[in-house]
Length: 280
Image 1 (spheres, rainbow, N blue to C red):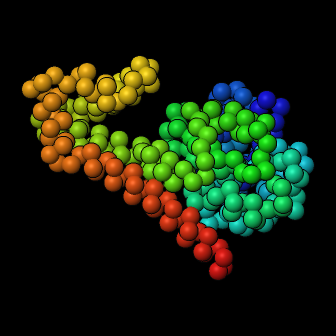
Image 2 (cartoon, rainbow, N blue to C red):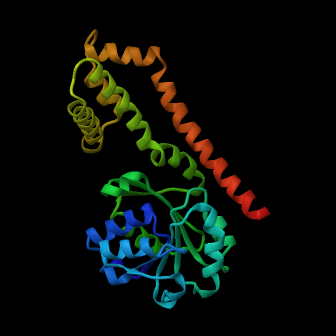
Image 3 (cartoon, rainbow, N blue to C red):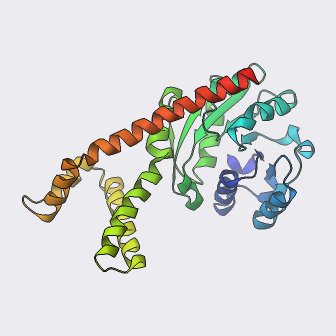
């Protein structure tokens, strides 16, 4: 399905590059079917073109009538201007996809023509290595065929999950911000290893492999984390002692609060963006 489509990235930052890299590496689309533009950075466009062979050009040179999917990949504060700039050049069959934090499907629909098809997605930073956990929310006018097209594109970056709009904030807390929680955990585990005489690079690999193996167990064994934890926790053993320390120092509550605070902030950002755009 994707091979015969044409897509255009409005914005050429790291997320746009992650998606371009994924789709080109996976050979899902030929480079001449991928367009990228930005407001003024010609050097960045040349860099993207040279790296991936895609078509890089100013927005006013895009072949609008040939493009099936437009991807908003600029900073969120530029969303309204971007939507306004393309609104009168679109036809109903084209899809507008946003990877911008805080920009809802409703916001996009309000700033485009009636009936325009929109999709909101939330990847995470692991998209750089094609291991993202990415959420998809379809607008009220978007066809199932176009949702499947978007999912095929996003699968070039990792796993894709279809959720409801009102679940996007908690998804952001879980997966959008989630990698940082694990990096923070790894930082602290690494520090303990180094303090006890281990080589920094070696302990970093040990910690990363341990987390990778635990995640793979959950995915491949299809068992709940609770069950897997119980299986490796012998009474009065080393793991039981470590888990007891986590309970004593409220490790579980800290994780819960991290997700809930990130989700709350995601909701606040949406509101702040809406308020700023209304008053601008």
